[in-house]
Length: 347
Image (cartoon, rainbow, N blue to C red; front, side, top):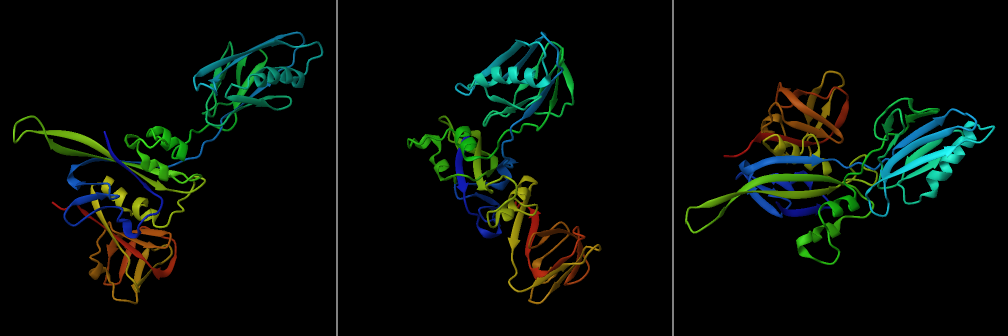
């Protein structure tokens, strides 16, 4: 059961929006708190933009010949599955273009079908917005719009092949509001927090499952264990390709508090004000300089992270107060950094 939903259009630095305190209590975006040991699962679903699937049918021209195939798609008005049978007879002197013209005319006459046809000497079938998937077939075979099938004979004189593979949307405003039953009429049971989703952006969807014990029945010591889910939606960008929200990676980057929680750890992120760090190309050597921070004062150990701008290195060894090695083996110029310490959850 969903206990709470929180929309984060901005992210607090150092991952404090979703973090485990020194007392072992997990704060979930200020909408739920729970003993971190009671967390039973963390799922992170990255957003992605919808891609309309494409299938191209290539006819072999034949005079006065029957052509037959079907499109298994959807009705735009109802959202239910819909099948369109495309059947016609070619004319005398037929060409691939005239045959394709006949097929396209039949397909495009049905404006409720979630597929549109284009092309010249071929029949290029493209899924319409919100319904990226469909199947094309005939008496001999069929192919779908979401895989990568090569040229396949689906019927006599008709070959079909995948073009662009269809991809369903994830993390859009409409997708999330529909998934979590948002009601614009102000019904609090329908998660009005979703009204805060910013139009045009995508969101990473984080679901944290945890158990809780609540009194049940008449017995003073009788309890009932329930599994609850807190949903945190973190703004991404307008193309679902790269995070644009400041501090996003403090929550969801490799070193972030949420991946740490998913792995059973507490991530504590800090940002030394004046000390800089750099990484030497190919060797992975890490060097700290300036300021007062050292590997010792940071309490650093193997498995922790140093973040220099967009460069992230996991510490694999420490050789001195200001020297160590990590997984990043491309150069990162000296700059102020963030330090993420991954530790066991407090007992």
